[in-house]
Length: 165
Length: 75
Image (cartoon, rainbow over the protein chains, first blue to last red):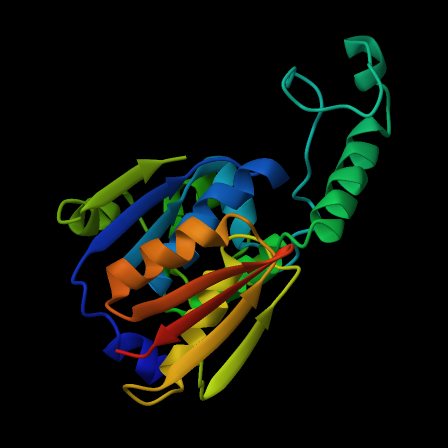
């Protein structure tokens, strides 16, 4: 399968994404675009920096959605901001979002990440952020590259699509 | 229409119908036909875009109630 995917890369197009957000809602755009582009034959690299690094952890249970500071989030019932700030509201919002994702047939971020890996999307973890937050490399999935901005630019400089998310 | 393989993509949302279609086509020989059934209304446009960008031919698109049936020929 993997050999086939590589062989299919006849488009000769490239896409680079910088993923900076670590919430459940913001985990979707980089993984959906990366997996889709790879499916279409693009060579894809995603550079994960700051909170985006959470998306490379083996355990994605810390990836949550917060209703706070997000007035556009659809609510089942109107909810004052002070109520949204109560303990447990973030977990509840995350649980409800995950239920909705499942019931609508939207893929989990775990499975979209897996699709990316199968399609040879290259993941780069920002070494500076790893050091800044004292992250352990053992917390991250295998097969990722640790590098800095220059590593990213080396690829991004020759891409057809380059996105900051 | 005759087909060599079938993919049930019912209940799946973007980008999974496209991703799974590509996986099936990868396992098929050039010229073979894949039938895909999807319930994702977005796949109507996406399957066209997929065919155009990958060079696999979209032979037909049919809407049957709430389901969409695509026939694709492997490049």
